[in-house]
Image 1: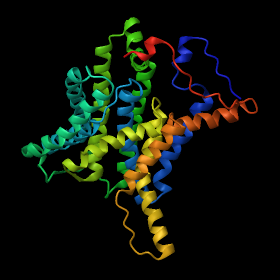
Image 2: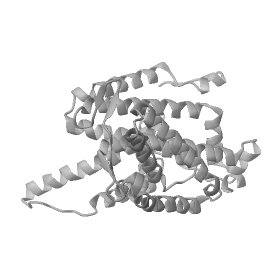
Image 3: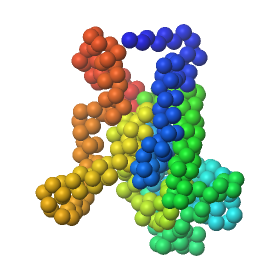
Image 4: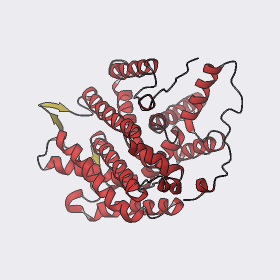
Length: 365
């Protein structure tokens, strides 16, 4: 059993709680660095896809999990980052400049859109962002001169200091590129949470009235959260364009927005770990379904067994299960398991039972 005593404010904002935790993450990083030599190219590509989804998940987690603002339109900002990155590269801008620039521009556009839309709350905010996702597909088709319309665009080859990087030609190099961006975004995310801005995000999530009473500029903070979230998602969109190779408006449809939201809910709202756990589920569940379907077909000699809509039904089923039995997601399950072994034999069954709130400020928005 380990007890962490916080004796100062600096102890509360440390990057790691203790050295043992830092050691665990170092071992995880070593495993990720060695992954290309442990799996084949197919599963390495799937791992790369999971990392890209994790970046997008961290972007949405910053807005929904940390600030409490639900969005169903982040696929539109992934599309914006993707198209901006490719268009800039087509005009001769190198990748190491085009990708960050695409993220910055996406964040600025997100801030502009946030000014009117964040006046909405709850379900109305979700509907407003849903409209953005729906409109983005039409805007992409209409802007044929830049986006290629329904035909779409083909991602330009990545060249960094004379080194050619391609998903299919050099999958290991592309994996390390995505891993680097993931670690960069992860460091930014973690430091935002440690800063006063991150505390303001959490205050708004818990109670806007209480946050305002404590001196937090609610409107400005929510716009900042939306801008940062869109910027991070824009980076994920830029990488997704190179991962897909060719893309059009259907690549960034409404289903992707819903998947991103399901991802962070299943993974665990309000935690960095939840973005990664959810990305693993969303990334590998289709492959697991395909492998299971092929196995069942071969056992019962059914030949090709088409199951239309099975992925959507599986996501919905998993979401319902977690909402009913574990609202804190996969990360909540991990916390309970870890606490059980840390406190054994003193663990109490109802230790994590949700308590009712009786403060009026906690019910007001």
